[in-house]
Length: 215
Length: 106
Image 1 (cartoon, each protein chain N blue to C red):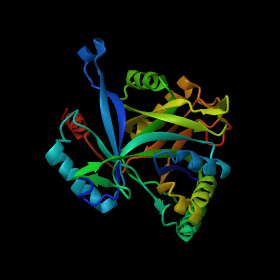
Image 2: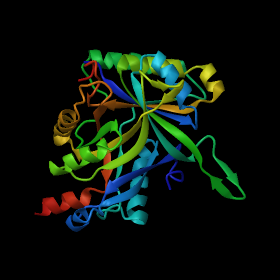
Image 3: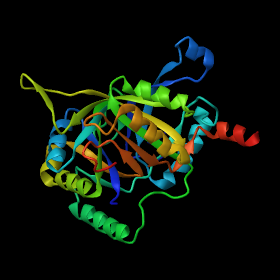
Image 4: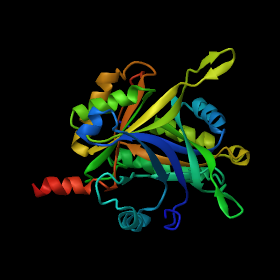
C-alpha cells in the first residue's frame, strides 16, 4: 500500500507493546508482539495513505494500530552523494537560527517521546509512564554502539538496547522526559538518551479523544 | 541554543559498523542500531515471482547541528557511495533531548 502510494522505501522492525485491559494486566497477558513499519514519503502522499489505513485496516477503531508522521527536514542519498545539497541546507539552517526561526512544525497536538536505554529498562520505563497517566508504548529491540566500545579478547561487545516510543499529548511531553531522566539517572554516562520529536499527523488515537470530547 | 537532530541512516545488512566508524570520527557520541526487513528499496529482489525481503540496519544518531553536518559530510562522498554502505540519510529536528553525559544536550 505504501509503495503503491509512492513511498520510496519501507522497513519493518519487530517490536512489543501492551494491550490495554485491567484483566489482561492482572493475568500478565497484556504484552503483545507488534511490527513497526517505517517509511519515507512526501507530505502530499500522507492523506491518501491515511485514507487507505482507515478503509482497509480500520485505523479509526481503537487498538488496531497507530500511524504517525514525523517531520523530516532533509534527506541525502548516499548512493548518489550531493555534498552541495548538504552545505546548502545547513547554511540556510544557520541563517534560520540567526533569525530565531525553528525547523519544528507548529501547532501540533502530539509528540513522540523516544527513550533509548539498556535491555529490560524500557519495560520499567513504560510501566512508570503508564502509572503516571501516559497511555501505550512500543518497545523496539536494538543494539548500541557508544563511542567507547567494550572489547573482550579483541572482540567488540555491543550492548543490547531497547528503544521505547510513546505518543503523548505535546503539553505533557517534557513531563514524560523528566520522568525518564529522573528514574533512569540519564545524567550518568551510557545510561540512555531520551528525546521528544513533534508529530505532524496522527491516526489511531482519534476515537479516544472523540470520546473524551463527547463527555 | 543550536538545534539538534535525529539522524536516521538506512544501511545495508552488515554495513553499520563502517558507517559508525566514520560517524564516530566525525564526532558522533554513539548510535543505536535497529535490525529491519526491507520491504522495498534499491536492492529489492524477487525469485519465482516471490519478493525476497533483504535485511537492513537503521542507525539512529542524536547530534547537535554541527555534529550532524560533520557526520553527513563524512558519509556523503564517492568512496562511501562506491562501497554501497548505505542508501539514505534523513534528518529530523528534535525538540527536547536529555541524556548526554557531558551535559551538552541537557
